[in-house]
Length: 205
Image 1 (cartoon, rainbow, N blue to C red):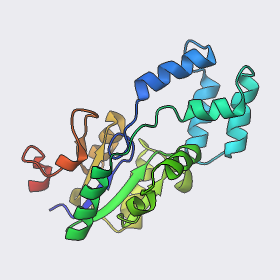
Image 2: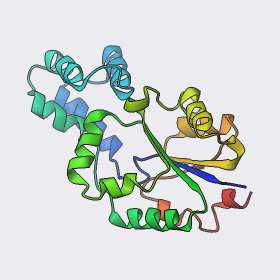
Image 3: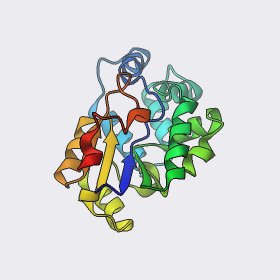
């Protein structure tokens, strides 16, 4: 029996354009691919291991043709719309009081600041959850198993009684390995508001 739903944030509630955003980043930075030091600094920033100032300074030194403001805009370019009907769905789900609701997201400080500034109902959204975990605040990130174990242990959850919803295949694979039931949602083809439709048999297990 499922008693807890663990949601990702990006491409579940807020729309992302990862592919086009990544391509535009490479073009603007004038590089063919991400170097190892860029990949590493991005991971460190995602778990809050370095400050936003140090993160932006790294990029500013490496790409002096861009201002810090331009770099911040470029970093946030993947963030798109947060349709309010998804908040309505979440509010209704909370009101039913049938499940514990947890958010578990790889989200850095710049991205969450952008969302807070542009999504007027962000606090209403956050308040729908029994627990709200952002990677840069808990210093853990998906798809590592320890972030899922942290959520399970902190909230005294049984893995087999949880369902995890995410658009990333690696994150889903880790959750499955830990016996958490999953929905690998397909952005722009599936929508979180259809969570309880007949094809989502996970809730009948």
